[in-house]
Length: 440
Image 1: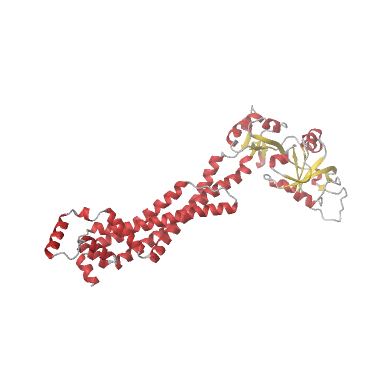
Image 2 (image 1 turned 180 degrees about the vertical axis):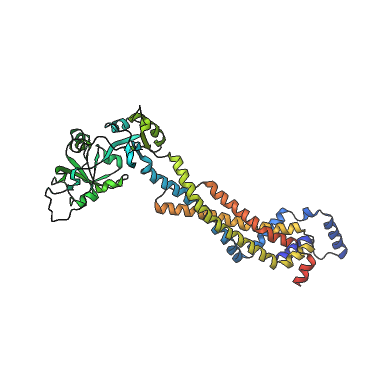
């Protein structure tokens, strides 16, 4: 049964085969009933929803834009929150757990920078006494005499000299502090450092350059003509990646053999979230009488980091979702306008039977709101499932605020309300005589 016929039957008495006088009396009594009672909100919703379901193909095509828009918006916000948490977690595992302290520098004559202070040799022990410091070490660059590091003691003038690897001095526990992995052998410890033993650790790049790939034969390298036993080869540093291409010796050996006067930097592996407090405590532990002579590099708190990352990612993804959502709103507006043009005769008949312009407009507005609500509900569900699917596939922890899904559904209804406003206003202004004449 078509909508115009249903509307007509609603207005006419339901009893058939009545005499003309009785019919006239019934119509007069119906006219005395207030108009609001004859066509209430329930009738409005019924008319709108029945017409929506009468064209399932068009309904699917209409809500497709809203489904894509809301789904994209919910999914992108969920992806942004999940990605922010994942990025923050990975950052916490590296930069957010790294603390570095070095002497402040001043510009001397000639434009050169010189250190204004020096770190104590027992800096690792002082830092490890602070709450939140899990491991600490000192590290300094060393320039050996003649700038030569070789694996053989003989210098052949006929062979082109290759650039030697860099040389660093460090205290015991350097690999634990920097998150390095021992490929073969072992790392030197505090005992080697205290005794000044001539042992060396090779980064994977330096070991390849020196053609050393095993330590069970007790290979040696020669630094400035002095033999150092290679005790281990390391790789996969989480911080200070330049050490992978360098040779690292104990600070005790560097002090006795190369005159190292002071550590270059003190570094520490810290607990996530302790960066702000250690930024203030570390200078007091290393130089209590001259804290201004030290420069501390410490990470922000985890909450600040997660908020910053999530904010940056959200801006990009939300813009893309809004663009798709606008396309969905335009689709609802176009279909609603087309529906008004196709149903001009029905609108004229309803107006002739006494329906007001407000009731006509309300019907089309409700249709648009229902379409937008369906699109928002389906799109929000698809967005949530999309976030969960990607998180499970990537073995991430899904992060999505439940209010985002609820807001997506409500936003779909609001988009439908906004999209149906202009077509509904156009339908309410159609004159009954003109509509019925044009439909004849």
